[in-house]
Structures are given as C-alpha cells and as structure tokens.
Amino acid sequence: MATAFQRWLSPRPPQRTKINDKPSWSHLGDAALYEPLSKPDGLWYIRETHHVENYFVRAGLSGPPLHIHRLQDEFFKVEQGVLGVVKNGVEYAITKDDGVFPIPRGTRHRFWAHKTGTEDLVFSIWLDPCTSKQEHILDANFLRNLSGYVNDCLKAGLQPSVLQIILFTENASSLLCPPFLNWMPTPMLFWAHRGIAWYAERILGYERSYPEYTRDSYS
Image (cartoon, rainbow, N blue to C red):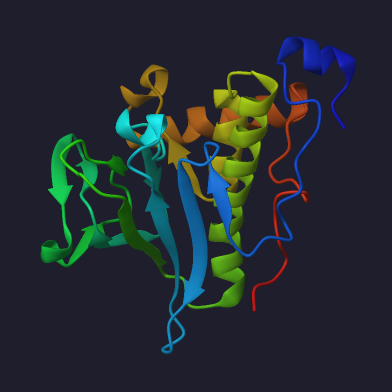
C-alpha cells in the first residue's frame, strides 16, 4: 500500500478496477481487446483486436511503447487489417499475406494498427519459449497489469507513470525504451532499467503486479 507521501511524489489511480475474473479484457478504454487462447498443439498465444474507429487506434497509440524482450522471441500473425511494426528502427506494414513475422529476442520494437488499414486489426501474438502454462500466465499477466493500470489512469484523468510501466516491464524480463533511455546500448539500458525499477518499487511504492488485474491460472 502506497503512503500519502508516495502518492504525492507520483500520483496514481485512487482504486484498481477488478479484471482478474475476466477471460478477456480491454485496453485503453475500448481501443483494443486481448484474448488469451491456446491451440490444439498446446501453444499459448494472445489474440488482439484493435478497433479502427477508436481515437487511440487511429492515432497509432493502441500498441505498446518501444521495448525489448531479453529472453524470448516474439511472433505476429495477422488475420485482418494492417499491423505496423518497427523493428530496430525499420518500419514494416504487415498483412495476412506476410505469414508469421518474427522479432528475435534483444530487438528494439513496437507495434500498432498501421494507418493504411481500413478495418479492425486482428492478429495473434506469441512468445518463444512459452511452453508451459506458468510461462503463459506471466506473459498474459504483464498485459493484464499494463491494461488495468492504464485503463484506471484514464478513468482518473491521470497520465500513466512511465516508472510504473518500467517496473511491469522489468518483472516480465523485458526492457522499456522511452526516449530518455533509448540512446543507451542494451547492456547499459539493462542496468539503468533495473535501477529505475528499484526506485519505482522501493521509493515510490509501485508494485510489480496487482492481484486485482492478474490471474493465477488459465483453463
């Protein structure tokens, strides 16, 4: 529980909206929908739908900020619409005709609904290795924490704290790359990121995960 002084240092939503009982959940209000799913072969993935008429989607803001996965490769497969991806500074417009689009671990990247799309963007996203339910729960809970926190900030009229998001990202073995850190080579970024996450947790009283947002299991 954050103290009054910590809340003064870094304002945060007065309460957290319970979403841990929902099998799927929204992001940025109703900009996007996240659905954790599994295939018959046991592969876990997230199906995302970004609604093209939403302001955040049209503005290219419905995807995550620039980041790096340290320990996992990431893959995208578009079902409908156009997915924009920046991969180590190069922009791509991905459609269903492009098949599976890979992001190797250690790659700086972000993704969003590309401006050339005229219909809702629907795509699947998964990480490798992610061969167990526990690994999938950790990945899905990062998205649950991020969406729950950002949605509650929107409701409260607050700007989400980049320090809280860095702490979420650190807990997911990844690195956020905001402009004030993105100039750093990855080894330096790793230690700066870890130090900022420590400050966010120990000094500001943010948490790595919130039970109101996250789940311990998936069926």
